[in-house]
Each structure stands twice: as structure tokens, then as C-alpha cells.
Image 1 (cartoon, helix red, strand yellow):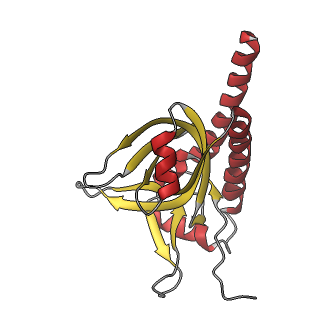
Image 2: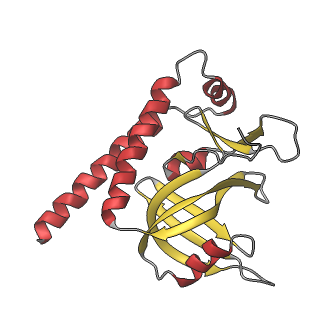
Length: 197
């Protein structure tokens, strides 16, 4: 076993749940210990993976390029920010013409607003244009992962679920409903596509 750090598995999470997550933590005092976002369904996320429609991009930097992108999934919006330290992602946001389906892997970042709220955004590691079938597959897999997290929530040994229970006052039923409605949105898309053929 080498001493090289291994990358964390990227959690598949819908925008609604991701946006509701505001609590971050480290599991060690080491300077370079990973920072995790605590998901309301009782899992930790150092990296996330999502697919949605890139609806807009904008260079919001003042001194140098700093790109903001809005990516919409069936449950809400992810905000991604990429600058000089994420050159590939910044380049993708500069070059992709919205609207376009994109797959994004990145790290959650929280920041406090002027009125004291905590917002969460994504620092993308990669942004790739994908097709509708890839987006649909991601929705199905993410709905499955979400339901699995909800089912595992009641397990008394699930330490992240206990943390989420203490830190968020959010009904899990919201995320079950979002997962079901995301799946239903795919069926509606299929019906519209069938009618237009």
C-alpha cells in the first residue's frame, strides 16, 4: 500500500439535497485532512458527481477570469465556480454554449452570505458535455442512491445519519419525494419525445 492519497468516491446527489446541506466537518486535525459536506440524508461528501443542464455561464471575476455556471437538474440548481486553480473547468465554462447537458465532478464549498446564511456551491474538477441518455441514467442512479441513504438513516450505527439528525431539521420525506419526482420527470420527457417522433 503506497502512501499516496486516494480520491474520495464522488457522491451522487440531487441539487435540492445538496443545497440544503450547509454543515461541513473534518475527521482529523491534520492540516490537509479532507473537508466533508454533511448531506441531510446522512452521508458525507468530499466530492460530488452530478449531471444536468448548463443553463448559463458568466465570468464574474474582477482581476482575473472566474467563471460561474448554473447547472439545473430535476430538483433544483447547482452553482459551480472555476478560476485559475481549475483551468480545465474554467475553460469548459468559457467554451460551452448553454443550454447543454454536462457531467460535473467537484468538491462542495460552503460560504457565508452577508445575512449569515450558509450557501453551498461546487468547485468543479471536470465539466464534460454529455447526451440526454447519460443525464437520464444519472437521474435514475441518483434517485436509487438517495433512497438507499434514506433507508440506511434509521440504522443506529450510521454515525453520519446521527450527525445529520442533530444538525438539520429537515424531513427525509422531502428527498424521497424529490427522487420520485425526478424519475417521473424522465417519464414525462419520454412521452414528449414519443409524441414529437
